[in-house]
Image (tube, rainbow, N blue to C red):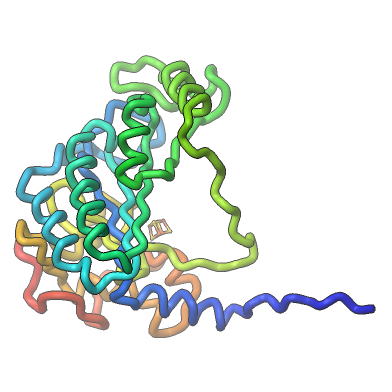
Length: 279
Ligand code: SF4
């Protein structure tokens, strides 16, 4: 007897799914950089550390944004990025507490949070506190065994970092915290980059809004700014090249909009104010 065969989604159907998810104003993905300073100087790092810690009015702006948007959301994801987010732990906890409180008032919202950290300051007490704040997914890089890792992932003082990170990871493994690896997605399934999604925004420590966490030093990556009141002032012309792939069903341009990005953008989509981005 023939076994039933599950039909995989075709590329067009997947593109449509990704399009619907990317355009939904019921979903918000914020990649927040609470500081752009780092205690490491990895040999391949592309960041220049010129922006420091997020100022209080920007922190308040992110909190106000969450308050303004919560009632209309069904999905909220906050990704903590840097710099090294654990150097601005109080900011992470301040905004996360605000998110948890707001979600408690809006039970329709599915909230998740993750962090990209070098792991050097990730002690058990911090991880337990962050677990209570909904931060339950970590991306921590080890470049190999100690001798190899310490040649590339050096601290700012030039010393290695492996032993401390490894000790932190072992302490987490021994703890009561839930553990597991992310479910692998099908290798054949294409995905849009968050930078191509209008409902995904990078909030930098100085309050500017960007799309891509790789091209941080490229001026074309700045598409607007957040106000202390939590308003998103986004320049339509600067957003347009990042989302250009949706209009032409262009998988390459939604998979990595930074590659091949046109430098003289034409307006395509409008989110927020139509005013130009104030300097
Ligand atoms: S470099 Fe390309 S794939 Fe990577 S985050 Fe930027 S836009 Fe996305």
